[in-house]
Image 1: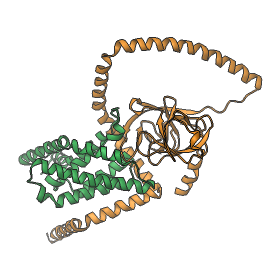
Image 2 (image 1 turned 90 degrees about the vertical axis):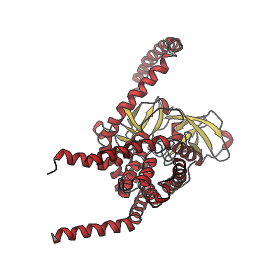
Image 3 (image 1 turned 180 degrees about the vertical axis):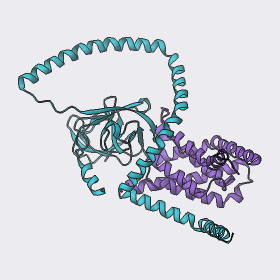
Image 4 (image 1 turned 135 degrees about the horizontal axis):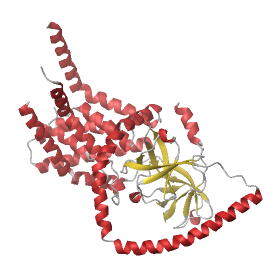
Amino acid sequence: MKQAGGIKHLSRKFRAWLERFGVVFLALFALILIALEKMDSPIINGMRVAFLEVMLPVTNTLAVPVRWVSKRVDIISEYFSLIDENEKLLLENQKLKQERENILFLIQENQQLAKMLNYKYPPAIKSVTAKIVADSESAFAQSLIVLAGSASGVEKGDVVMANGALMGRVINVASDAAQVLLLNDVNSRIPVFVGKDRQRAILVGDNTEAPVLILFLQKDKIAVGDEITTSGDAGVFPSGLVIGTVDKVADDEAKVTLLVDRDKVDYVKILNFGQRGILQSTDKWTK
Amino acid sequence: MEGLWAKIGKGFWFVSPLLLVMLLELLSFYPFHLPNMAVIRPCFALVAVYYFAVYAPWRFGMIMAFAAGLLADSLFMVPFGSYALVFALLFKVAEALRRFLVDKPFYIVWIGFGVFALAANLLMWFAVAFVAGRFTAFLPMLVSYSVLVAIYPFVSFLCFLLLKLLLKVNRYE
């Protein structure tokens, strides 16, 4: 009886303490977490992966009714443009048939030339197609969660593409899901080539839809419409992956329109080119 | 002797405000494929944290706010601890001011949320800038903030319904 009273007294004391100092304690704890994030601590990555593992089934379940409604809305809006769409598809089909003939001819020619030169093909690239289940496009971050993880062979640093263009890279991997850092996230920095002159620059995300090009040497050689491709300098992305085009050129930076229209992408391709580049050294440091 | 189901039921109702906040976080995170969503996607859960702090702080404590914030940090890929800090501070300050807000007309509480949400968004903006080493565009944050304030009546209505339900359940228990 006396013991129970003691426990009650202690609990009341703890509550009073929590009431008074709880917010200070929690704020300090949060600040420590932010500082650890700034230091790129593996503890934070571990916590993110743990949350991802736990929340994935919940996210998937919640997605079912929302997906159902969204699909119905799409069907209704598509119904009104059926005739136009059909005409467009017929034209596209004709064009694709012609292109297919050309491609078959080129493949044959390529094989013959490779045989003549005794050319050794590079090893095949491992790829996984994954569905986007969550999207954190906001003023504070630009990332995705896709339904493919370590169980499907996805690794940290893998390249993420959609419609033949680069979207970002995998930064956290759980067993059945992965988090993707997009090119327009504020933490994304990629060495690129601009235009036909292949001028080097860095593509930096700023949490808007259009990332910016910085650190280029000759501003007058950059024009609106110039194509941006990866330079492969940091060794994370292979050279030549298409990113987008220059949209606006200012004094010391240029705005870029990304080729991938995020609003129309449901699936992404995760590719492992077998290169880790500078990520290897950062991983070593964090370990 | 209380049955197991009754205990589970009690536990469920106890965590139901937290579940609603988590549900709102997941809803903010769903790929809706709406044009310009990258700019306007706000964190709906902020409304619920404010609402519970003003109208029923005994139903949703500061630790629950902090835990919900950690989940948001993890899902939104923002610096870990930033939403946790924002949610906990928002809850504590709104709770401290609830005596002033609780019996005021709806529009005053709404304006109050506008002020709180602005502070919360600015704090998030600084946290992101601190970790990234530079400030991001201000306009998207402002647009996202405006959308968040505009949807306050809808999300707060959900919270109101849950509180009403909780009152009913308590009456019959």
